[in-house]
Image (cartoon, rainbow, N blue to C red; front, side, top):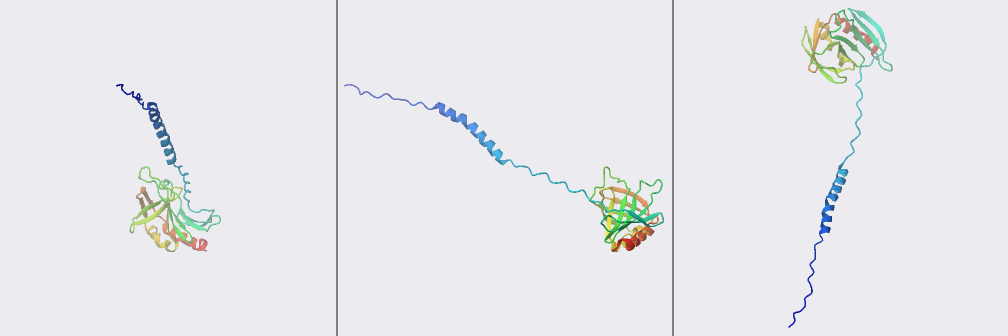
Length: 214
C-alpha cells in the first residue's frame, strides 16, 4: 500500500531584520522624545528687576547767615521749591578734623542732628545710605541715650525728632561737656566736646521759628 504523500512543511523564519530595525529605532525615538520634553520644560528667565533708586539725602539749598556765637554759626537754607530750614554748625578747630561733628538741623515738621566726621572702629564698616543704625549716645552728664539714625549718601548719620520736642530731645547735648557715640553696626565712633552747644541749639530753634515755620 502506497504511503500518502504529505505536503512539505514550510518553516517560517522569524523576521529578524524587522526586529532589529525596531530595536535600532527605539533609542532614537526615546532621545527625540526626551529632547522635546526638556524643551517643553525650559522656562524663559524673568527680566532682571530694576535697581532700586539711590537713597536720597536731606534737602539743601543756598545758605544765608542768621547768627553766630560761641564758635557756632547758624544759617538759613532754602531748597528750590522746598521749605526753609536752619543749620547750626561749629567751625573745625586746628587738628580736630578727625573727630565727630554735630550739626543741629531745625525745620517746620522735623528737626534733629547730623553726625559726621567719625571713623567707625569696626574693620570695613561703612555707612550705607538709607539704612537704619542704632546710635548710643553717652554724655559725661546725664543718662545714656539710645537713638535711631539713618545713613546719608555722604557717610553721615541723621537722627530725626519731632520739631515740637526738639529742645527737650537735644537737652542732653546742651548740658553735657562731652559725648561719645557708638553703633552696633559701626563700632565706636569717637568722642567730641560740646562747648557752646546750648547756645547753638537755642539759636537754631529761634531761627526755625522766624524763618522755617509757615
